[in-house]
Length: 307
Ligand code: RIB
Ligand code: CA
Image 1 (cartoon, rainbow, N blue to C red):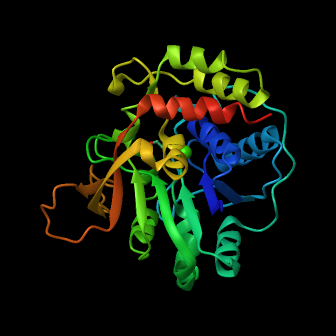
Image 2: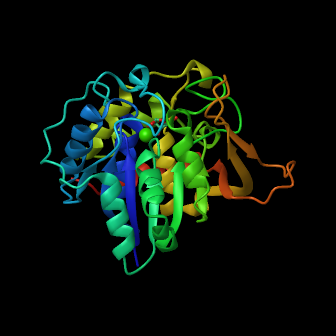
């Protein structure tokens, strides 16, 4: 029985690989793809999601959502993802998105689902927060929420905060407080599985499909981060999906996660208490370690299942 889920994204180079992994995995039943502004503006993340969806040949409905956070202004990450969001890799245009707003679609899908729905967030979680704030009762039909978000150490968007978290801290606080099981893939677990030039060469040599080729071209455009030692690029978003497909590749730890919503330099920080120092009950499961080679083998195998 495959897992019914809604995938919220902001493509985004790593979102692209996460979308491919999700749509290539029979363990997952992607009911909808919802899109937010994030890595680049919604005017780019939406066509990127439509193009990626079409490249896979899967007819999954795509819904446009929030182009800004609940509070404050929008800030992108073009330094990592390029002006267009996919590192300059041009893909054929996909067919248009549905007319329904993402938050409305999330509410409708969760409200009417016969079995509880998993929400997967690999972007600022504004769409999930809007759905949960405007119809709190849908939380009862949410199985779990799996997020790429946050860090227990230094951030990648600011010294204190990870990009998705700081892009809409209030939205993340709403999701963390919704009362449903939360699984978080932080920056740290991704830095244990950096995509090196060798990984990319091996992946590219593994097949000839258009999605595999696009994945390698897109990932090959990502600059290596000084923060990570300049040896490879982190695949943040695919890790959140890999947890759902192959949880055996990970170790986890329950932790209490709270948000810094202040105006200061720590705004958007996820305060992750991995050692029970606050005596507060855990409200999330944090992914701690990953079998990196098993993860790359999974990506390579699944990308070769796509056209
Ligand atoms: O910090 C990494 C996260 O921010 C990833 O989801 C990436 O796509 C960006 O959105
Ligand atoms: Ca993302």
